[in-house]
Length: 358
Image (cartoon, rainbow, N blue to C red; front, side, top):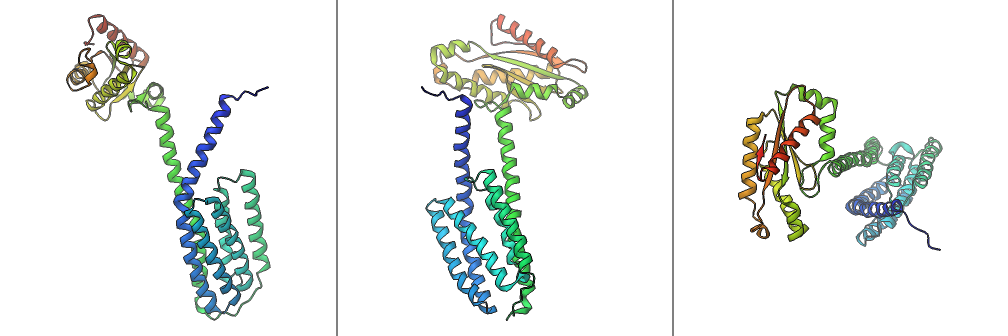
């Protein structure tokens, strides 16, 4: 017996695939740079430990440099998660060994903290798994700090100890700062994308009906509307659009809608709002515009539709639009204003189309 798969399951599967795709893109963009910087840092550590007389750590850093170079090679081959696992293990072991051999005064224990951010952003790690690893890192930091509190090491370069400590703290903190800045930027981009998906019409790039309703019905907009001297609503409908679709196909119809939307947007102010109200219907909100001003704008739009749009398939059938205009004043609701604009549009259609009535 076959098990049916719901639309929700398909949606979740698609989302997971998309999330994995963009996670790989994020890793690809950052991992190569991280591996390169990590290799350079460990070369510097090699010389530091050699001059300090910490022979074991100097030898270990030779191995660490090889690990970071290998991780870089893996990232070049797009084996990002393997590279991250290797880097994570090296950072954990290096922080523990360095602190255990030279003590906490040089600040190598702080390199455990960037691991938390790295573990939390790993796309393959589930939340519980990431949380478990982060707890291990925190416990490791606490145990390491307590266990190495009395570790003493005779430094050959004692005068620069404080500088090394400050540098290690800085570079350990830097990933947190960069991660937060990246997340802020990403969240901002995501919010803009979500806003666009929720409030913009894909075909025309104009606002959709939902956006206009939310805008005009909000209490803040209501107060702002009342402060206008007046505003006008223009409701426009493409003439004979069903005939265009039936005789020439939906692709031509879509092209006509896009071209009309472009004319509408190019002939209004930045403060005005153009919205695709329905299939072939558009709504324009003209702020602080009376009937006379609105008529001038609409006649300009009508002329642009009639003369500036060049779609070869429509050379015989033609392309035009009818408009209804209604002006609202201080105590007139949005619903009442759009109802009046709709009546005028209906009258324009009945009068022979390609008309403007107010």
